[in-house]
Image 1 (cartoon, helix red, strand yellow):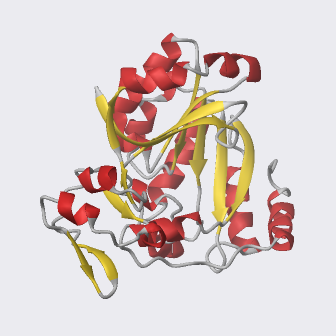
Image 2 (cartoon, rainbow, N blue to C red; image 1 turned 60 degrees about the vertical axis):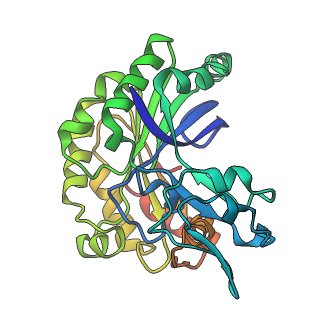
Length: 294
């Protein structure tokens, strides 16, 4: 069983309790305007170009058999219709200006990295978190990876956006100790505009997940001009306040990590204004009327 992985982050302390290893799987069915991992959207490997590192030496052009690279007055240009993300140009770039995001890995290969830190999971109450993208889109691989972790006595969690049929999440419940699930925008029209889909299925999945009793954390990335109002946050907090198994509600301030990544993929990203601490505190006070907030 193999999957497409774009990062394995060791000693992670923000993706669940304790010290964790976070495995990031490629592929996502949302198109959030503020996505901080745009390299996760496609399930296939992708070529990233860090223009600020490029010295225009031409080494990559000589290595590209698809003739997808050329130098012009604007510097190195990539024809992404021709690029197959084979990685030869990235391997041969002396300045690390080119990078391949995405590697096909077996469950056993991922487990080799995971097992290196097993003692830390035990001592800290940590474990393994599988994130993305949307990890459930690689469900067969995800299940086998979770089973392998369980066989080693390692606690498991996923980070998910919840935008899929309930049966897909239901099939994972027996292999999970924690679900961290996003509820990005309460207003459905806004959700469609900024996330690219309706939130009706997400709301249904939140309710059904709460009925399983599985520990869960609901999270909202707070985005200026999108969901940074007391009305939006209050409605989300009210919706989830009676959920069985809810550990807490987490508000995450927007950060611009994905902006340069999107440019390196040839995109034209939207950059939102940063959320001020004062605003975040106000929104937390609103949510705390209904639920415990981190």
